[in-house]
Length: 316
Image (tube, one colour):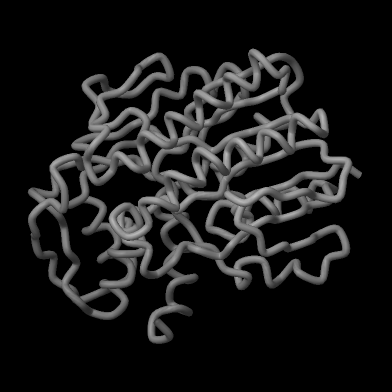
């Protein structure tokens, strides 16, 4: 039985990845300090003998009962609402935390995968964004604590690959949604769905013409798992996301339709000047390397997500 360690494994993406690994026959150890994750996200597997949940801040030194075969480093607050409220924690987990997770992989001779982000491209001047694009990032803006710490995480991951011999791999996550997101996450999907289900105005920032491409979580986890299992010497980075681009206004209208909500759509000023105007992954590498691309339609993914949030609205 292979042993996988997942940092941030009770968070949105980490909980889905942990369950996928269990279904594939892995022993899974989750490390999480619950700053944005929750034990509730893994409550349905807590009694699985192959699953261990440890409350641990990966900024602090830690050990794991080994041997360990693969380390997935997903720990980090990732929502725009976290950038001004948890800036030091974000900087630390993506620097010191990444270093500690890499050390765990090095000591065990384990494969290491780091969850990077489309935010490394900043407000892109190239569209869609290929992995070869270096980005357009404001290092001192509100978003810089996340953007730059993720860029640092990629750099130290490659340093460990080149100079420490760690089989490290980088994947860059584009906008992803699905069950286990926080209702107060602050990102588009929970914001719009929560407002629609409560009958509140759906708030669209700016003109609503800025674009995003939304990937359902099950598709994303499939891409991560394929990358982790891929034989050979592959460092990445690899973009993982959905290439179908929509405006924020179109997305608000779709959620209003699917929730059958009477909410009106209202407009507010953009929260920061660094908010990307467009975001869409170039999936050429993922298709060639992993034979992967998203298969879940936006409507199917949203219906599953709406059903999840219906159980949360009213309890928040």
